[in-house]
Image (cartoon, rainbow, N blue to C red; front, side, top):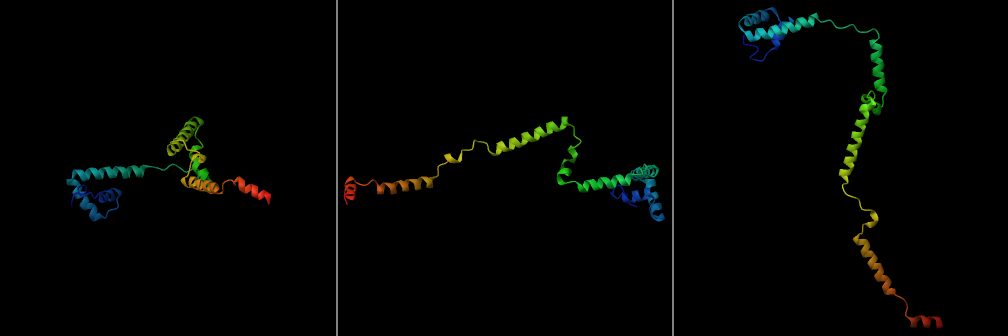
Length: 159
């Protein structure tokens, strides 16, 4: 039999410690363990783990465990998304919540300042080239009409 620790095939050692190997394979493994210190050590560790698991007794479940479990599940289902989001912070004392809130506010303000680093010019101070061009065209049009000559105005009133 090849060395199981060198082949990284420890599943057979776990099955041996659990007692699930067939008799022929277990006897072949025991012969290998007699001559291989590394596999013997790994098998001894696995046997110790299985003995500890066999000796362990689970604590008794309280009689109202199911009722409390189903109530908590129902409360979790009924919570809105905001309730689920804020649930971890509900039991937080004010001495911890206040610095956390202040830090979040400072981060938000820093983000806004970095996004708009300089002063924003008011809309009325921005001069657009097309607007100036239209205004100059309008002024030229008004100059073409101009004020009437004094001679024309005199002839008009005479009629």
